[in-house]
Length: 249
Ligand code: NAP
Image 1 (tube, protein in one colour):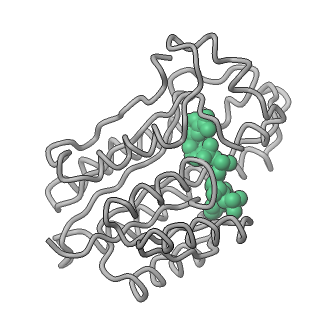
Image 2 (image 1 turned 90 degrees about the horizontal axis):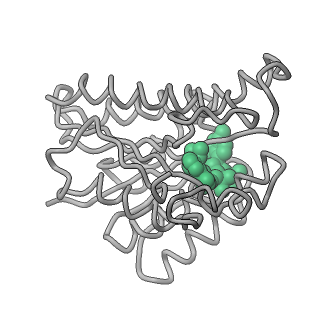
């Protein structure tokens, strides 16, 4: 088998950083993207290289088409043929009801979480599809349990964006199944990362953890393990599937 190359969007922190590091341990050359956290992205790259792995970091806004194209071209040039994409970059904003949300906020959430995932999937399919001379590959979209639960009173806009990610996963998986590309998703529950601070509640996981059947929040690495299984050869007959990494929530 040839060299394994993975792009992880939003790999500077949280679930993306854990995924990038686990992927490197499993032999992937990793290109991680970030938006603001250059120093954190460099730390992840350095940690991977110090352990003998290969990684690069690229600043690229997934909501910006030019940035996305440059991200994939950089990975082509510096790492080689893409074999896996993890569509992880995602945002939420301050907790509020739907009747308080304005169009600017809605468009920001949709641009990053939905348009970003579509654009990155597009670039991956163009490279991987056997119909256009590629060698196949795997895409994992990072959805959320929010797509099933709706996030009332917190961020229904975010939940709806993850509903769109679920539909992207289903539709694209069928569209490219005969072209050597598998498309799956994970739905994390409440995971200890910095995303909750964007909602205005950094300690949200500790507030809601007693509502989780397992009575605890999850660790980013527990999500990364599910993602790495979905991209692996062990998941060779799995496409259009969802793994809920949510402690039973
Ligand atoms: P996080 O700690 O806030 O990290 C988000 C990452 O996405 C950062 O690396 C950030 O880059 C990057 N990012 C944000 N906007 C971007 C953009 N426009 N372009 C490129 N990169 C961008 O979040 P997380 O909790 O690890 O979340 C990762 C994914 O898991 C998201 O899709 C999220 O919706 C999903 N998820 C999380 C939870 C949870 O409880 N934590 C639950 C369900 C689903 P910078 O560092 O440069 O800002």
